[in-house]
Image (tube, rainbow, N blue to C red; front, side, top):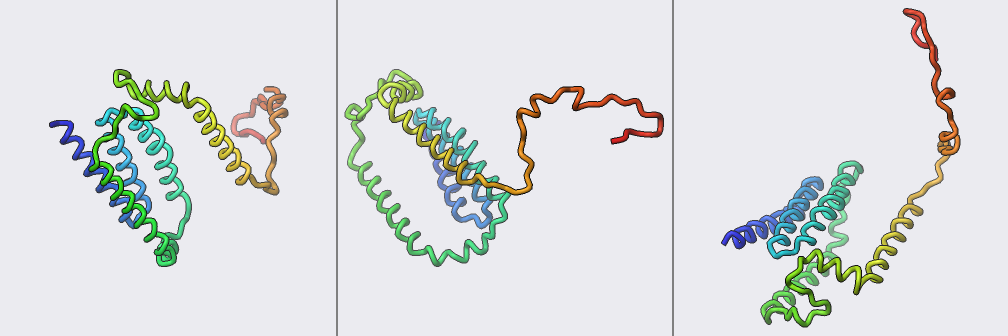
Length: 203
């Protein structure tokens, strides 16, 4: 009974916060509603026994993605009135995407009504006696090791590409000389003086 009550509370809050994320006119409020939706989705994952997914939702999505969105929205001077003015231009594309999402939801509901999924016929069956975090670790580092390493390489290439694309040659900027900083001695950087009373320090 307690699990059912918790499920309905988490589910209702997720739906309401998701709707408020879309309906809020203030972008900062939208990001805050999105963070609330992520937290409650993590609660739903805990209820079904997927602690690893819940941890990813909190650490990755709330701790990184949502906070990054919040900083970008707050620090960049974005003219949201101009963005709303272009709503009509992308109305057709948005309508097509909305129809596709509704079709996917209907297909999912139909598949759920057809019956449960046979867990024994999955491509990677898991022993129900071990925790899901241990099961994911066993699969990632044994059966899917090369796929996991390949995903890491793709992320590394994306990070390097982002650094290269955003790197700019600026004029009038003094470069940092690491060797000169390391070779600098304390006696060259500081000077001991005894100024007279009332004279102060001469720079």
